[in-house]
Length: 582
Ligand code: FDA
Image (cartoon, rainbow, N blue to C red; front, side, top):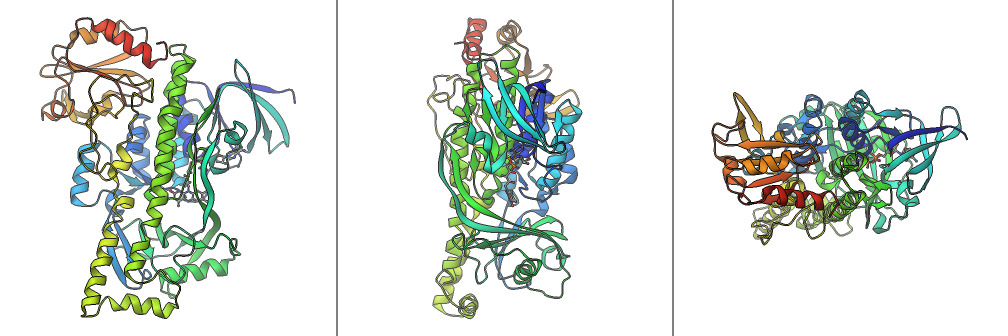
């Protein structure tokens, strides 16, 4: 085993976490290599809901349009339906994924991007193609075996599955983006909390023209309450749209203590028939696979020069659609830090903030996703359908809601309420956008001395923009000449950005005096950028002459409410802390 290949960052895995890490690093000009076990990218749809924060990340990385071109648009995602089968009775709907008029307004106000449904087998090629085009050295059929790290780097042994031999790769840093059974996380000894294998689930991918049952209530998700639907799984049977309206994925549970059923075509077809409820429709089964619902998160994401991202450090069910979103956001958080450390601009201490910022997010989303499964139970309870019973009893209970009795009226109300409560899974705008990195836990954020006012509304449901250090820069539409752009479009691209207004000249000079490249954005009448609607002035929470220093990942690192006598000294001190030199 003599061959030693060199790179700066070695990434294990080409799923959403690994592919986006490669894309971000290549975009920033960091030499990187991806090794991935199989000879192809994901061949099944897997994760799909792509939230606004992820779309902002993809916008900054220059692939938003490629994703939008292939994704199912937001307006076809929104009628989450509860039914007895697609052809059967409908029990109710939730306007989801930003399709409720009020939530839609909140989405439009929060971000220049729109949510969409981008199945993983379409997302991965977009990320990987762009990464390779920008310089990523990509190796299929290459399996990570082990690593050894020392003061100067990490030596990784991999197996080339084509040649059947092993070789070594020497990297300065290693990213383990090798999914829910991460060997990198295991070898790095990352402590994990929670448990694997909470429930059993089966994915069945199939082609069928179901437009007859879906086109009039377009949705990404159709939930089926039927006999057996509470066994294992993710709360109920699920018919998920992959491509409108002829490619589908069913999620159906099994008793994890009894083991997965034999996934024959006959079995898969029987599940499809039960959930679709129309035997006349031709169905082609494409694949079936068994997986388990997990509730596990790593307490720490790094060990020395080894960092893990994505399912390697947070394992949870698909509820709320957080899987690939969180994975992409992990990598986006890590990539700019690696870039600045590799360039010698930041101390390696900056890398400690990856763990400090992302591990709490991982724990939060694992908890949220699992809680959402439990929140489906009240729908069954409203139908008296949780306790063991015959199918006939369940159908009778469901039919009883149509009676003209006091009990049936109560049942209808309980059902409406239970279905409406599912907004915490299907319209949780705050879960998507309120991730904060408080200065108390992250050294890459400088406290500004103001007390945290907290959230004024439910932080899971409602996004609350703020320019507080540790929050994502608020989005506002501004102009530059004839161009309309988002404040988010002025930041990113791997650089820090300083935003100020009229009277903020001292901050602009202070930014220019720093040893690293800081973009400056002056917003005000007659400046390069203008705020014709006054939206930015309403959101920025600083005066015209104040300043916000925004990290390459769009998070506010430092803010100053007004002008400062010694702006250069103040900004230099802030950057020293942020870059780990403090
Ligand atoms: P991901 O698992 O996507 O990628 C891991 C990568 O590491 C792969 O490229 C793999 O080949 C590679 N790898 C692993 N071990 C390796 C080794 N030793 N050497 C080299 N390479 C290695 N989510 C959701 O929201 N809705 C859904 O319906 C589903 N369905 C679903 C089905 C199936 C079958 C799976 C496996 C997963 C889902 N998910 C899902 C989960 C979702 O796919 C998941 O959250 C994201 O893919 C996580 O992205 P990662 O990049 O972290 O891991």
